[in-house]
Amino acid sequence: MKRLFFITAILSLALTVNVFSQSKSDKETLVKAQKIIFFTEKLNLTPEEAQDFWPVYNSYWKKKKTIIGERKKAMQYCSENMHKMSSKEIERYGDMYINFHKQESDLLVEYNKKFKKLLSPDKIMKLYQADYDFKTYLLRQIRNTSSKEE
Image 1: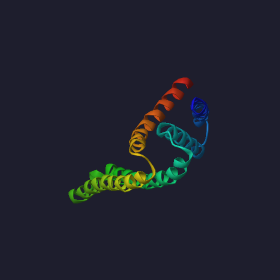
Image 2: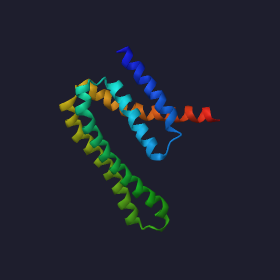
Image 3: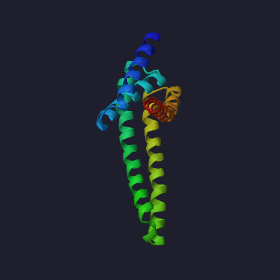
Image 4: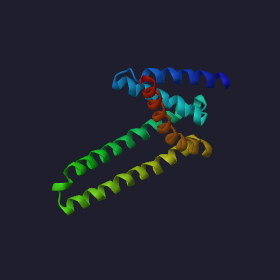
């Protein structure tokens, strides 16, 4: 177990060092690799669990990213054009904003059922915590890399 943690830590460090000197697609690939390492470690997934878990989780995130992208696009449009929009149109964008969050919530409910078929309740909760923690982890990596470059 210690050996696995050590290998994971070294791989994670190597990926972090390289991520900021790569192209955008390379960075995305490296961040995905870091995410796999991070989540596998946090959830303590067995190889069998990982094999079943990752396709489901990736499907969840693909759908979630689509919703987030649509929300971001709509909110950007509204932000840039609010001064020339009617009250009715602004209200429509407000309703759209709420609907995007509802879609995310519905998606989580749908995938929570799928996760329950794959993971124990404690691993599911670790998954939700890891989702939150990974964002913090990435921000720390960016800050650490930025401060080293200065």
